[in-house]
Length: 198
Image 1 (cartoon, one colour):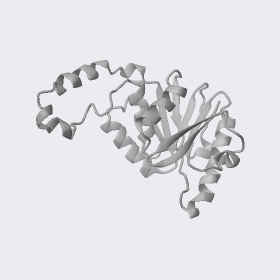
Image 2 (cartoon, one colour; image 1 turned 180 degrees about the vertical axis):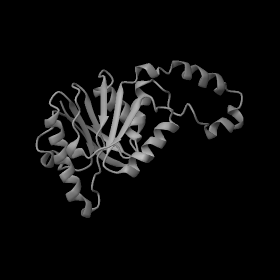
Image 3 (cartoon, helix red, strand yellow; image 1 turned 90 degrees about the vertical axis):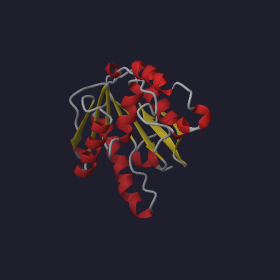
Image 4 (cartoon, rainbow, N blue to C red; image 1 turned 135 degrees about the vertical axis):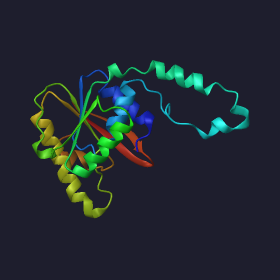
């Protein structure tokens, strides 16, 4: 999973000021949910307890009032249109469950849709995706074919930007052109590049 500060920088860099964000290979929806939380200014971990709250020297700290304070700063009305699609119906089923658990069903819109046929009638958005990396040699060919499909998706939507995260150093070659901008980030311990096509 992307570290929150990596995702935050990525999201603020490209998406926070646009009205449309779509992940065309969303899998189980993690990127969509994190993007919505960041757009809404939701504090990380606000809905869960932390082990340190039980430490003897922390018991008198005002965790409840801090949670109420940051919850009051959350602005769901700032969430742009966020859409996600994936070829795998099971992945979309899990994504729907995760979106519901995150209480974002009114803000994230999901569909089963092959990348090859995805055609959005609206203009001026951002495709934000974390496609499979093909770390196993057997998966590399299919992943690299997917990178080319992302290029074709961008060509079908010339007014959209595309932001793809990959650890594959050959991403640009298989995508079909050099990125307009690049940023290094980490997905866990895996060094990746955020390829940005404007």
